[in-house]
Image (cartoon, rainbow, N blue to C red; front, side, top):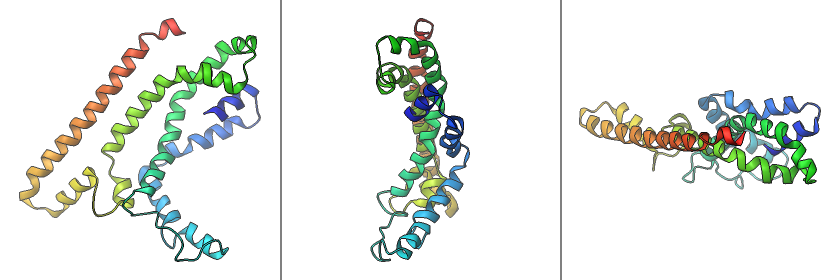
Length: 209
């Protein structure tokens, strides 16, 4: 975010292109993203073959980064997908701050970094909080990424429900319904947190702007 803000403030060339590149992962489906991470980081994947080809690591030294218990590849996928979304959610406010209060920063001789930390960042924190809860509520019920990159045990709730449903056993239908209700209730709790946070901070909007 700071690089985009700095480029906009300094009128650097190609800053719009850089912004589009940063935002581009938002438009890639999670299924495609997870499969791409799998192809790059899996054993005998693209990164593994490059390291072995250039003699950086031997085949046995390359770490296992996908389908392992710590969920490294799942975390990488979520970071790659969600950070651009949160950036895109905060950019309009960030640019509004820059236009309205840039002269104030010049009066106090603030550098671009100080201006961002002391003026811009506190004002975009509410939007970052809302974006975080939106992402959290989605990821809690997300299925594609942990199904492709996760392990068979332990499994996330959404994958566990799918596996139980795929077995087709009538004895498991009750457990499936309970787990679905649990996932729905937790998602509603996150959605309620988003609503109240947004409602609390937007009541000060007229006074702030």
